[in-house]
Amino acid sequence: MKVSVAYAENSRQSWLNIEVPDGASVKDAIDTSGILARHRIDLDNQRVGIFGKAAKLDTPLRAGDRVEIYRTITCDPLSVPRRPGFELDNDE
Image (tube, rainbow, N blue to C red):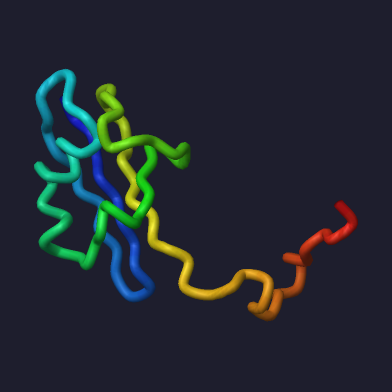
């Protein structure tokens, strides 16, 4: 079945379309894609997902799924200056 694996850094992105066997997991797709050799990815510390929803490495895939590898946050989001239109609502 066809799936894709995506990962983005500040300066470059990879979106790889691959073929995996039926019943393949998120980890199987990542391994098959070869993306770990292209980027500095630490699956022990980085999260993964399918179409923007968090997933585990052993989650089975369906045809057409997009596996996403998320970067770790490198700064405190509360200390970063806000862009206009992206204000944090602290009333909650």
